[in-house]
Image 1 (tube, each protein chain N blue to C red):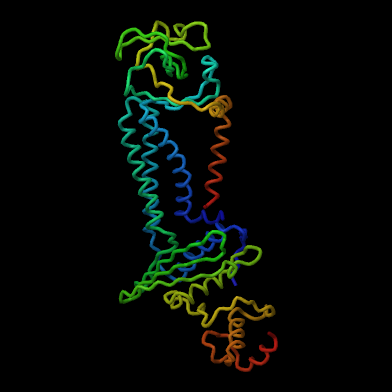
Image 2: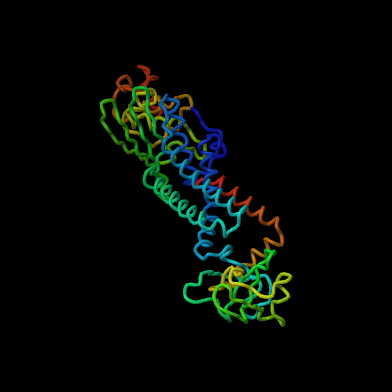
Length: 234
Length: 172
């Protein structure tokens, strides 16, 4: 299981959200989605051109003095205010918490945006996919941060990736091993450092629904004779 | 968190955040400057020559447009002596003539003599164009920070450095 070596403070909402936001492009790009940087590039272009106008104004004023550059300064200030206004609108209205926009090789598009409410440690993801044939679908995923951060503040990649793969069909198709069927349980299985994550899911499912492990779809580690033993352990 | 800076776009965005804070502050200053038509629309009183009206460290707001009437006797004006960069805040005590060519004499309330000795060599009076604004409002004592910063210039670098560090490392 990939556990990050960096620790963050689990009490800091900003850290939790930012680390999770950073993990999404890393994961999706590793699944061979091509990230589209148009949103962030436009924002950078707007911001830096406003900054350049400011720098030019500073330079003229420094070299030529106030009186002679008064009119240029007026125009520059107006332009700067306009660009800043557009930038603010861009961040608030167009970007709107967007974390990742990309397309996969088949030309299907995925747009992920994230949101958190103040003082509530739940990660709200809104994922819009446009599939082949133009079908647009939006999925909303809500999970508490403690599903993929351990107590010390390390980021654990697997449950995070499973959440994405199970919640969004396009991601699940790109990474089928991470798709987990059935109800997700928050309860952790105490024993079983020997059990892999998939085996734990499988055993929990088996107990709750009384189905034999063979019938559970996404459990590659399922073994036929193991059911009774596992039941006793839990 | 620092590893996030390895992504060049993210680093660019962080630097932009810091740069925008600086540039917005500068542009607000310039905007005020252009509206008040003064190269320095906010000045700090540096000496006690206008006591008891203004003390050292007071912040003064200037207006340099004569919309309602000409600069008249009794107004408190700020001017730079020709060739020097120090703003002097004194009161107009005499005016000879009208319009832009009027000759103005100034004197600090707390000074014994008028400003004739302060003017540049050969200059006996001020003209309207020498004045960078008339005082229209003031906040007492707030400007003392500026006096500290100018007397201890290393403070400026320290403040800017701390600000920069805080903004770049924080992503809120």
